[in-house]
Structures are given as structure tokens and as C-alpha cells.
Image (cartoon, rainbow, N blue to C red; front, top):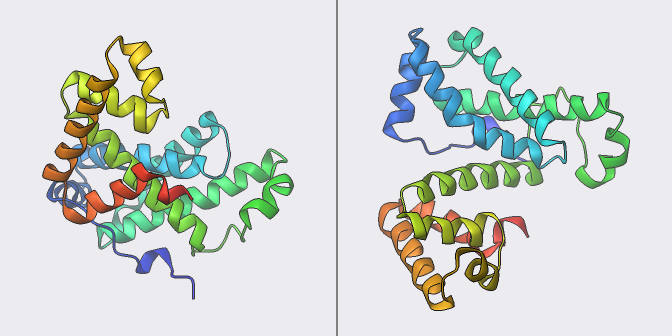
Length: 208
């Protein structure tokens, strides 16, 4: 049985929960923080359906703008996240349809009815991938400058060690040292379950 996304518990930190409470009370700042919290992972999720970056950003912006008017519809942050991911999926499929690309992609992505409130197994994996990749972006921002550059080039941009050496004008041993520092940082500062997911992403398992 394919689970409804609304039945899947996502992990949120203390700041996320505080922003949700502020948003529910009508605080603009709470809404802005939630907008920023979900914008990047939702764009990554939309891109899994092979739409353009511009289309993905427009879809996500529309969904997040709708969120302000629906603040009374959610009694938990999980339900809000469910709305955002399912709405993004549905709006993305509608965008593909309007652009006459749905038929070409239908077999590849097993497109469901846009009215469905369920994510299939592939779409749920894409949601996990988007959330995890977003966490990785945020974690890399906290690394020392050179370490952050090395980790970003290796794991987010897909460069080889040789390419990193050439572009940053450093030795291969420096690349490996900075890589180890970055992984040690992730292991120390991330929760065990988050580190496990990010390890899967770094190894390429989540996209296999």
C-alpha cells in the first residue's frame, strides 16, 4: 500500500515549530521564515518531474503565496508540509500538461490524477531527496570557507577530485583532508537520523 504523505511524519526543529506557531497567529515573520524553510526543498522536489528551473520556481512561489490564506487549515506542521508537497506535485503536473509535455513524460513518471492526495513511492523518494539535499546545503554553509568549497564541488556540483584540484589550485591531499573534515563535521553536528540520510545522498544511494 502506498502511504498518504499526510501519514508520514517529518522531522522539524524547534525553530520550525516556533515559526509555525507564529504563522498560525498571523505573524508575518513566521510566514516569511516558513516560506524560506520550504522554498528550496520544494523547488528541488518540483525539478524531479523534469520541468524547467523557472517553471519550478514559479509553481513553488504560487503554492507558498497561497499558504498565507490557509493558515487556519493546519493544526500541525506535518499537515502543512503535506499540503505543500502534494500541492507542488499537482501544480507541477498541471504545468507539464499545459506545456504539452505531459504525454512525453507520462510513461517515465507514471503520472497520477492531479486530484490525488497521495505521493507514489518514487515521488516520496524525491521528497526525501529534496529535503535531505536542502539540509546538506545548510550544513555546508557552516563549514570553513575552503572546506565548504571542496564539499560543494564534490557533492553538490559533481566535480571530480582532479577538477577540484585544478579549479581551486590546491593539492589532491588537501582535497581529501578537507573532505574528511567536512564529513567529520556532519557526523558531529547532525542528528544521527539526518546524518544517515545525508550519508545515503553523498553515496548516491538515494537517487539509484
